[in-house]
Image (cartoon, rainbow, N blue to C red; front, side, top):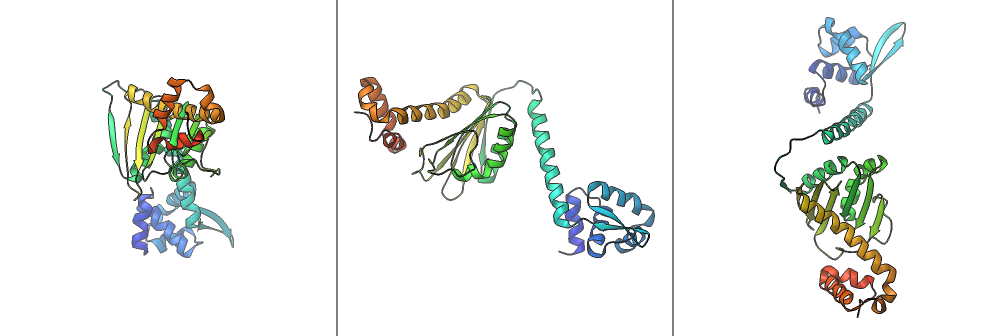
Amino acid sequence: MTDMQTVPELQALGFTEYEARAYVALLQAGPLTGYQVAKASGIPRPNIYPLLERLEQRGALTRVETEGRIRYRAVPAADMLRDISRNFSSQLDRAQEALADLRQPTGPEYVRSLQGYDTVLAAAETLITATKQELLLALGSPESNRLASTIDKVHRRGVQVSTLCIEGCARECGDCRGRVYRYPIASDFETRWLVIASDQRELLVGQVTGDGGASAAITRLEGIVAVGAQYVRNTVALAELVRSVADRLPEIADEPASEAFRLASSGPGGAWLKSLAGGGSS
């Protein structure tokens, strides 16, 4: 990439044109005196020292004293970009939290549709970040991996996190957070589910196809949010109950309970539950 291409890219990160030109000059030829920076970058000399001070405050350069003169050295590009990324990420988190705290005018409830894997996952990250108290998740391992750092941030912030691993991973992958329940609810499906319930306030329900496509809906409709959140809770509760009494289920379940179990475990969507019970209830 040439100097002419680099300057606009730095401007897109918040540098002024002169700041970008000075940084590039220092990166290529530094350390330099202020006079040398002005000459190498084509920046008028009266502007150079206030500009270098701003770059120093930004963390893009450092001062060095050699032979009794102050010279300026560019911070390595990788370090500078890493600092910008870290600062932007922190600012974005603070903005999301601040916006989530704002009172919004009461208006009609809505359902918003999303298309595309990156779009769906970006919306999921925003929803997770805005969570204040309770986060319920039902997701597969690829999405768990993609969302792990965002979930970890809210978990460390004190949010109560419950995760339903719908693939029933036999081994801990290290991506799930909070109370983790592993049951192969959708391990045989070509389409993975993604359910995120935030504070009993907002719900995302999505699906990811085998070819990497994704679609989802987000809603604050109270009834739909309650159903989605309760789906995660009920699935976990049912699985845990069946697991804990699997060997005695035929003896302790009466006819209505047995019929309800047969209904829940019938078809490909309930095969995991029947397997969990060791063949099912008679």
